[in-house]
Image 1 (cartoon, rainbow, N blue to C red):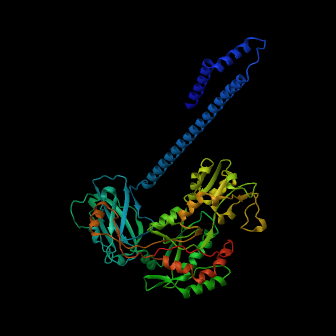
Image 2 (cartoon, one colour):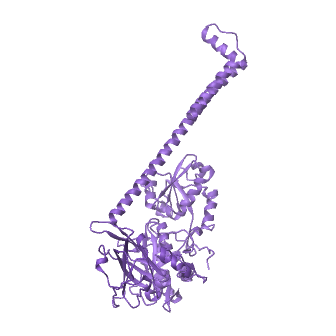
Image 3 (cartoon, one colour):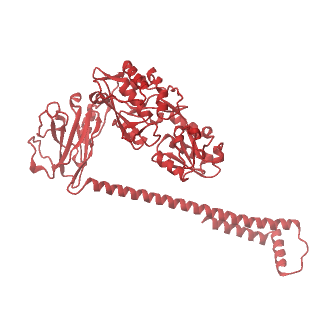
Amino acid sequence: MIAPFIFGATILLVLIGLRFTAWGRRTSIWLQSLASSGVETPPTKFSEWVSFAGFGLTVVGVVITWYTISLQNRKASLEARVKDLMDQISTTQQRLQTAARKHEDFAPGIDIHLTAPIRDISLIGNHINFEWKYAKHTDHLSYLVEVLRKDRPRLQQDDTIVDSEKCDFLQNRSCRFYATAPTSQRSQLRMAKLEASQGEYLWRVVPAKARSSSSSRPDDEENLVSDWSEYGSFSFYPSLISRITYTKRVIVGTTYSDNVNFSSVDATGNHKGHDVDLIRIMVEGCLSIFNSSTIAFDDSRCDGTVRAYLNNPNGYVSPAQYDSQQLRVVVKPFPSVAQGLEALSRKETDVFIGSLTKAQERENDAIIFTDGYYDFETGLFGHSVQPTETLDDWLKMSRRVGVIDNSTNHWLATLLTAEEPFQNKLSVVAFSSFPAMESAFERRQIDGVLIDNVLFQELKNPVAVDVDNDPRTPPQDVWSIQGLDRTSAWKSYHARLGSDTEQFAIAVTTDRAQVVLPRFRLLNTLFNLDLVHFGTESPQMGLYEPLQLALHSPQLVSIRSKLRTSNRLPPESIEGVSFPTKP
């Protein structure tokens, strides 16, 4: 719309100039005589030639401007269409996911489905929130909930319906109560005698007629309007320390989507890698349970573990039998670092390790990082014929750069796109895993990758050969783009990390005692809320302090080189940088 207006206005101004100005009238008369007569007219003045040339250049400039604006408008229109199509795709995918969930929730013959908690999830605190979906739900229905203790089969089972606050799992194996929030298909059970109630449980729910009285009669079959649901399972513990000391297990989250030398699985399905070995040695070999309730660094146990590790050519091997004070690592893989950290913040795991970058921005009331155990540096790598190519030279044309979604590298890439010299030259493509990004890089679907330099050796190319079989030598047609550390984005990125260096570290969930104030108890019951108040006592860090001591112990320092070489990582020892730690 703008381009035709500018073109028309320019032509109008030129016509006005030809009609009402002296040079315009002279130029017009000269053009008319030149077109109508074969006889050459008297020589024109130099100023008239300049005027004619200026007129021609003006017309050419108008045409070029109009064409440029037209291309920009077409580009903007295409970008808008792409955005609309992407939005439509997202909407369609959401609808498909919703339809799939509905199909899974209500299979033929099953009209009630449990949504939380299910599949042996571990809950920390002083209460349990139950959620379910009933296909024929109405606001006039109530629900009967049954909770059954799984790990105390010798206790007596009681089918009497009681108030949820009167469930006593110290005396009885089971408890039945009406849902506290039936209209929202939810209920809450506040555990009494927390230490005595810790353990494993099953639960189920059944729709029933609305409760008309506080009758404590056994299950009235005529009040039930459907069959009982399937059983869900969960375990309950009042604190992280109680879960660890009760089960003698530490749940370790990790991800296999990045460098396989840090964490992966072998051909037999066993967990392996630098980080897996490290956390097993630290937890199983250097920590112990004291007085049935305290976890601490065990110097003598750590000595024996490290000596056995150094003398064993096969590396660390978990003990065949665990003594009463020893902890056992249970590895739980996640599709991505983001999902692993979310599970850690919900206290579903105790620690997370797996080439995880220590970042101040990732820490909160639920997550804290240990000191770093492996230095690295983020680099920009691309296909290039110039090994010394700089960032400014590489971005003379538009580039597509791949990153791992929601990683710290993604943070840096986003900051780069906001920097003025690169705003229109750099676009970011986020991938769910390193293999997906690696494949796109090999097929030249992206021009470069922004990754940790320890992942550089993982970049494969069908025609690339490592020099002297050195894993630290990059493929010959893949080079580092220089100048990344001289950008403003680099400084902003490190400000988000909270450090001038980049390091892998262990994320640990904290253990804070939660106290429900009396004035919040009624709101919790009525609206099924989680209004809690953190006590004024200093937070219990659980595994944090023992892991810090183990990480900096002479025993762990002595095996650092072997951990690297046995997992095909650079063998040189990298001294950890001491970060400010929380009290």
